[in-house]
Amino acid sequence: MIAYSRATNMGTAPFWTFAIVYQILVLDIITTGSLFWSQRNLNVHREKRKELYSKY
Image: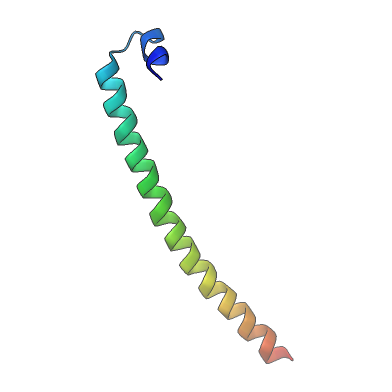
């Protein structure tokens, strides 16, 4: 990571702050997204199961 920032002629401090902020944002998006999707998938799954049970 440090070698990469040196190679791109960026300071180490801005690179690290950017990396931390980026990581936090990505993790936040992933966690909220996964929670949202799991809820949605559960609802869809329930609906599909109801349909299956009503058929038989």
